[in-house]
Amino acid sequence: MNAVIEAIIGRRSVRAYRPDPVPASNLEEIVKAGLYAPSARNAQAWHISVIRDGEKIASLGAELKAAIIRCGVERYLSLARSPDYRMGFGAPVFMIVSADPGVSVCPEQDSALVLGNMFLAAHSLGVASCWVNQLCPVADDPAFRWRLDSLGVPASHKVYGAAAFGYAVDPRPAAAPRREGTVSWIG
Image (cartoon, rainbow, N blue to C red; front, top):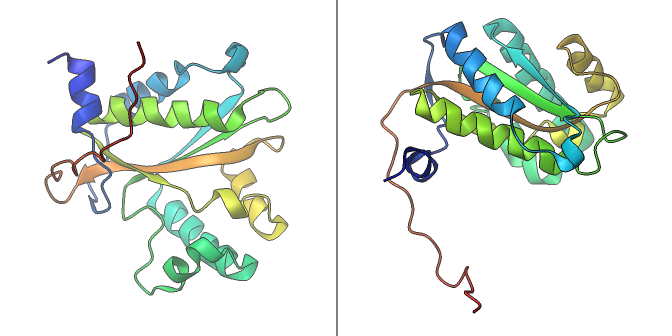
């Protein structure tokens, strides 16, 4: 099977990480793959904030938990109220992808492609990953936004996604069966 297709089919989201650091050279390759994602009109209006400091990741997670509860983000309330909540699942690296909606015509889609490329690159290097959605609905809350500013997220940007990166505690599970009826072949 083609190596790219094999990486696409083999990648899984991982929600439990070892504390082992990810080598800088691997992180650079992962970020580079993200920067080569397609973007609408080739705007490349994204920014990637790479956080490798465990204390900063933990602090961001605690502040995020409080922001979700304070803002009443319904879809994440039960998650945030759990005593076991850990934003990045204990991963040693957390990345935030943002984009300038005034420059890109499709900032959310462009950011998703950046993350997708980074997930595939990470998988090809033996690094596990997981998309983390919880930042998006509270990122513009003034009581939380200052933290994003301190982590290098440009003031003109909105956060469209984030991810945990590291080495999985357990082997990756097999893929769930694909749903039937999701493809129509015409002609």
